[in-house]
Length: 407
Image 1 (cartoon, one colour):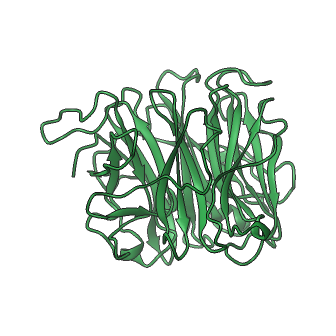
Image 2 (cartoon, one colour; image 1 turned 135 degrees about the vertical axis):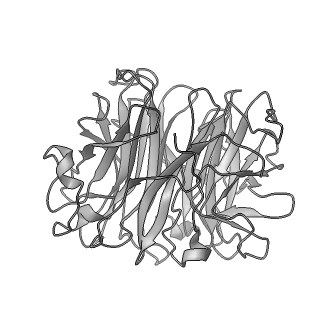
């Protein structure tokens, strides 16, 4: 695994790639794969596929399954625990014929759920037509380790894909199993402005493996018509509780991250209670593009000792900021971790496996637009992946792995 804090490139877009080139990565470990090594799958927003005239050197590697005129989610595969990667497959929009453009997520079912056997890989993401007039969070399934994919259902449909513009889009799906081992999809929702919510975090539950979905439940809201909870990510603690992290964009919280807990993955308490901010004792806080995970290995101190026998919760984001909303020291190379599983108040800075020039350094908002974290199987290291600036506003996807040490 790479020991350079600059990491290695998973994917570098061609020079003529439109927009951001690549961003919003996600990575998942497959516990039921039949490969000899440790199998991981990764995906991301792939902007070269939105332009059929783009000289994308990777499109031809997907075995002819990629359409020439629609964006898709590429799937990369590693069988050595994330040390090396290969282009593997692609998820195509076979339901709307629009293309899969934004916010992909991967989730391997650890056990049989509904019609799916253990090891089925689910994917969710946002399907949009060329004119961005609609948004559709769609679910796909692979029963062969990510080699082929089929449409399952639509979780939520919304309006034009323009944020903060009095439109009604839906965004940013996240998949998990609740305490009853039923599938839950969390997402950001702009369809409730008449109730005073500019955007909120909600979820829908399925009791048949994602074929159909129950009514939406609100998880995090700010009823002032301005602040916007969004980008939900869920992890589970060793005691069975669930942790939800999300950003709150707007004049009150300025993109800060918050965490809430739930006993079952469905009941997060009063949705107006945002929980605890992800910030250090001196007021340095993670902002925008949240991710959270629990790692069994905990965080090492200078002597290499674990800080907690119960592991640690580790969070990432686009930037680390001061309480004055300026760039804090270590932004782009620091994660925050806590072993306080009750109040989530004692967040400590830890050196991130991957170091990159952040939004402050590059002037590019697309840098670090989600930074997934995946503990190694033994908990001794943490794999980090994100979008880093290449040139002219384009980003590539980079990754690195290292033990976690207090910074």
